Image (cartoon, rainbow, N blue to C red; front, side, top):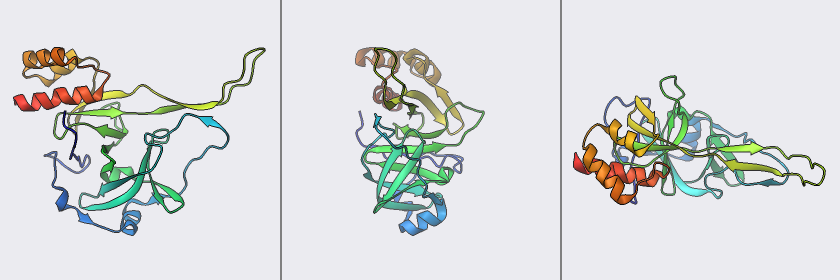
Length: 228
């Protein structure tokens, strides 16, 4: 499976084409990003002892933000807050979050790439999603967490602490910016692709591709691209 992914979708502005050359983006200072994207300095916080984490990556990782189809800011400390569905940035001791994520073309945090999908009645997934393949069709993963308040003790049963628990990830096939469908099984995914069904079915069986593992689904789509 491909280890490094250079992928981006200007979801709200591109009418055709999936990849863009990263050197087409002009490097700007963080002040330009704040001006264009309007970072929200108010981060939702919860006090007290809480088990689990609301973050995809607990620690900030160096990353990049591409926005407005022409600008990029590099070497940023970033993390993805699953509970708030926000990309956070740290500047010294101040934590901020993107207030207008629809302006974002892509965010790279470590080796993970995220895009933002605007809420629409056209498909059920929205917000930040992780992207797995370099071109259409691609696999998307929507991650999330739930927060449970502290439960009072009952008789001889101890109380449960306040906690974050990961939801089951949801995986989607994105054929184009306007075609996104939830993946229910490997068989239905192969049927939805429409071509090379036998070759893909044989490959999925040989490699034991699971519909619950996005890295394996991405491997299947890489194989599909090789058959085209």
